Amino acid sequence: MLRETILNIFENSWPMIFIFSMILTSMRITYVVKNDTHIVFYKEVLALGFIIYILCLFHVVTFQDVTWSSSNFVPFQEMFRYQFGSNLFFRNVLGNMFMFVPFGFFVSYFLKLEKPISIFLLSLLTSSTIETTQLLIGRVFDVDDIMLNIVGGLLGFFLWRILHSIKDHLPAPLKKEAFYNIIIAFILVFIFWYLYKLINLGG
Image (tube, rainbow, N blue to C red; front, side, top):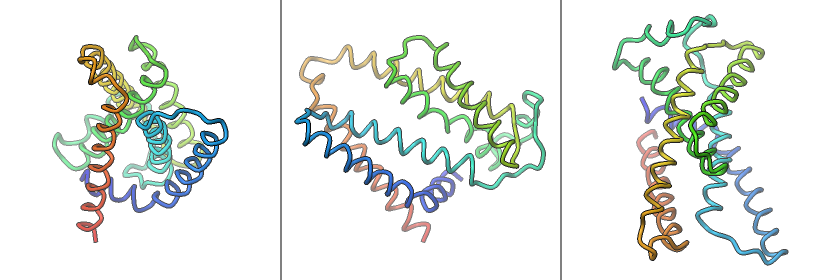
């Protein structure tokens, strides 16, 4: 189910992602060259990654088909409707939760958040805005989605705090930019390899 979801998002949003990435990258390179600015590879990748995530999130919440026909304003009503372990459970419960893990991580990283209440409120505001927008464009509002998104945002926050804590305790040689650049490079290679395998299997 996860493979199909990722493949669907990639197949439908890659043109938008590619165009935005090329525009932003070219603008950033021009700015750096013009102002002779020092750039940090892993920070640039994280910034671009956050933008790509937002684009993918936009696709998911505005273009994907819905599997229900009416709005839900009762907490836990939709959440407990799905059988544990079923495809619908993974898609609508775990999917809505993990969809906001990157949000919690990226926002916590860029804003250097230290308290969970901050990401709780930001996740609540963002998810409520998404659900309200869906209602206004003829889709549905689901309060359970908001709760699951908040949990995902908090998970992303705690992931950021754990990694930040590990970073503080690393030996000096592993705190250098070069080390983080290598880690990010390996992650990028893995992502491209995974997408390549995914496309081949999907084809």
